[in-house]
Amino acid sequence: MTSATPPASAADANRLGIAALQSGDPQAAADHFSAAAAADPRSGALQRNLASAWRALGDEGRELDALDAALAIDRRDLMAWIRKAERHEALGDKGAALAAWSAAVALGGQLDPVPPPLARLLAHGQAFIDGATGSMFAAASRSFAEIRGGLSETEVRRGEAFIAGALGRRRIYQNECAGIYYPFLPADEFFDRVHFPWMAEIEAQSDAIRGELCALLDDPGEALRPYVRMDAGTPESIWTDLDNRLDWGACFLWEYGEPNQPVLDRCPVTAAALAAIPGARIPGRAPSAFFSMLKPRTRIPPHTGVTNTRAIIHLPLIIPSGCGFRVGGETRAWDVGRAFAFDDTIEHEAWNDSDDLRAVLIFDVWNPHLTPGERDLLQRYFASADASGYAVPR
Picture 1 (tube, rainbow, N blue to C red):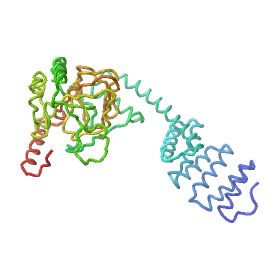
Picture 2 (picture 1 turned 45 degrees about the horizontal axis):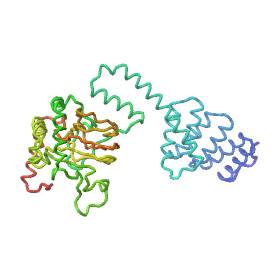
Picture 3 (picture 1 turned 30 degrees about the vertical axis):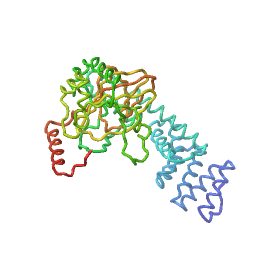
Picture 4 (picture 1 turned 60 degrees about the vertical axis):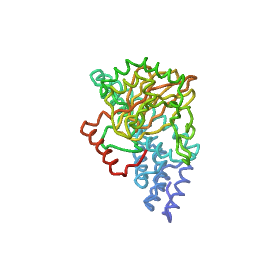
């Protein structure tokens, strides 16, 4: 039964609605909550209460209307999204349920801490999202497999990243340059081998290059130094644990465009292999080439490089099990003698979880997406900057 006398305010009507709901009279509750919402049309809480009454009455359409009215007042209404998600899920409206649960989980992620009752609801929502996106990923992957054989290496990598990214299964990373950024180049994690037809030639010399490295390491002298050497007074950072330590060591053959002749003389096969590569030649800046040694149980933290005008090449030489390398959303294992190229302005990291030394030859070349004219432009840019006298010294 409804009250014969209209309530004096939205608050009074709301109290009567709550009492009716608790006493098992959902129709009276719906009448009172409707009156309360009419008296205070900007209250999302009253719309949620009205939705609860319609739910008790089994009227899914009016329940959803009330929840939509609450969200029209405040799109950040977490409980309205949860109730909306629950109703769509119960009705089998899978797409609408996925959209509502996604909104609810995103809003819930901003709570710290999450109240236990909400945590249980949000955990259910996350499980629904995982199941839905898993099903969509499997279906999309099956469809992609039907055309995969006719696609190029580039198309396969982009297609796989698109499907995984669209369904929230991986992050798509962007360039983060600490120095020179050249606009509109593709932000690709790994460059395809087709861009580097000379790779097979340097791979064929892997055994000889590894032999020269081992001889060098037997008596490195001053050639071996810490890769990370921070200036005095530098605040603590991700590099502090590696600073001036040989946990990550390097033997440079070229450094910022300058040859390290003593090391080049001790590694003639490596020197000749590098000389045959069509790399960048920028005085004071490029090329750089070095043997990179990572001691056992050592990790290089996630970081980004200086410029996207270059590609970084890794030629693996000594690779125990337990080593890995991630660029953006893709993780690869090093295979001895198998080179690859990547963009180091996309977040990357490396690790050696083994009990043995890991060693890789690392060098830079032009970003393959730069045209010959753009490479010429960059060389002229740096030459003019140096000639101006204002170029920042390294």
